[in-house]
Length: 86
Image (cartoon, rainbow, N blue to C red; front, side, top):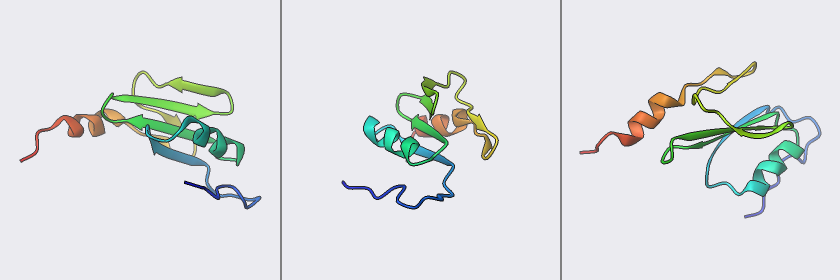
């Protein structure tokens, strides 16, 4: 799938959350085009990674935080994924 992300010089997109199915090179594209922070959430593995210009790292407490977005607790979201459905 071709993406036209970042063609505009003044993008307002400063933070982005993607599911873990996004290809790694797609993450690099977002950073290259000016997205400051990316959170990569995998609800099935219960992991959150943070990506920025410093690199990609796991968020071990599952509560990433940025000045723009604030704190987001993925623990509750992941618990809902594990709940049985009727």
